[in-house]
Length: 252
Image 1: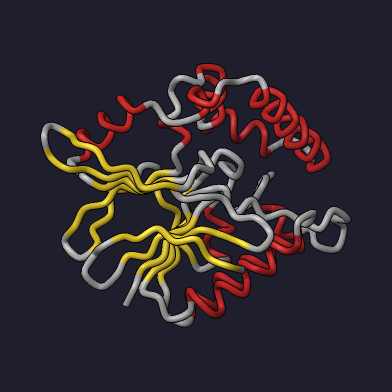
Image 2: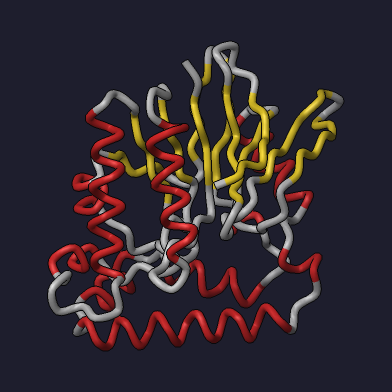
């Protein structure tokens, strides 16, 4: 049996082709897998698990999308595939209620997982981009429980406005940053892998799918970067029955 890892689907009502492609992928590809790991940014934005209660009054379609995805993931889990969710920089407010509805378990970031006696470190990847000081400052704030509770206590309309504002600010900030600032910091990668005693790291976030081979303290190491999903194509890492990971682009 294989394990599948994906990241950065950024699902949203405005791009139904990706949602349809992912739902088809769940039925045809993920069905029968031993486990599915989603390493953050399943949704383009997440304003709170109470979204699951708002299908009738939510004209945006986000609530209906949330219920549809939870139902599809629950079906996969009920059929025997273990489902794991990690927070991304877009859906860091994803909570236990959605995870329960989806039949999934929330993962810490980073998460050290054993695949057939081989330890592999799983991350979303945004914490590795330490040269982006403005984003790192926001990330530190947004991961504080008190800040999250304050946001979740806001009326739903205010949260929708806040999410839209944050996305706009992120887009404007990204357009003015150099590519290397938005990519991972190599020294941070080495340090994190050294701290966890691993030689394989899998992450997303940067939307730069690739396999990077290098050395840590004279020992071969590998960093596998998942790509984001767009209409017509997605990215997955397949871990086979021997624990070997392979990055693949897929048609959806």
